[in-house]
Image (cartoon, rainbow, N blue to C red; front, top):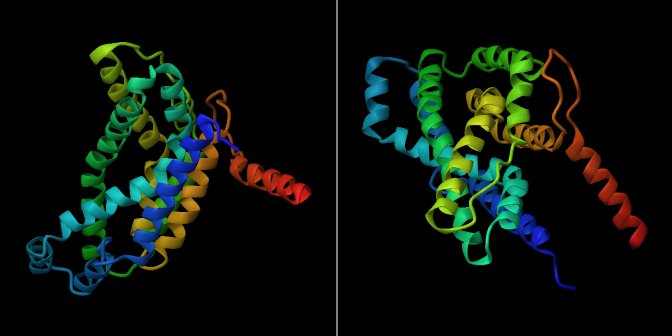
Length: 249
């Protein structure tokens, strides 16, 4: 049976996400470089920081951050990329999608520079401490129920009309990726940073955060106000799809 275009897009993005997740969990060559942060954090000092720089740990962390963004965020881009395919001519679709993803990841990489500086600084000043992660967890909870968070989530549903011809189509796709990245960062910056501040268990925390961020992205826009709501749409979808599959077989 031939798959629809939307299903092919979803399957391909999920497959890439799973592949990158595997890289992060197996961690060949210590991609995430967390091990070395905690080793030097045991004796925080200016010398420790200089040793981290000489080991090019920052660049290693930045690579790990980029892979983390790809693994966690690609499933969130299924709907926007499906939208691009619907709005673009066949000969432009793939390149427009690549430009969208490039713009999106570029924004996250720029923010990642500051995130990594925070992570390295915290590891040096408060080695193996859960206090920074706990403090950020409290901030993330407040951010989750705030109207500002909901505004960013609402903006993430704003899929502007894209130009159909020539360089304008490519320009619009790139700009779409940049703006979509900004809205995602605005809504999920605290959730994204939280796992990286944990001395242990950051992989499990990343998986939980990914589930939460995908779920809240699937929710319908709401009026921005202080509101505590369980954003568990992804779980509901999984339960329904599982029941359907069990009925079929």
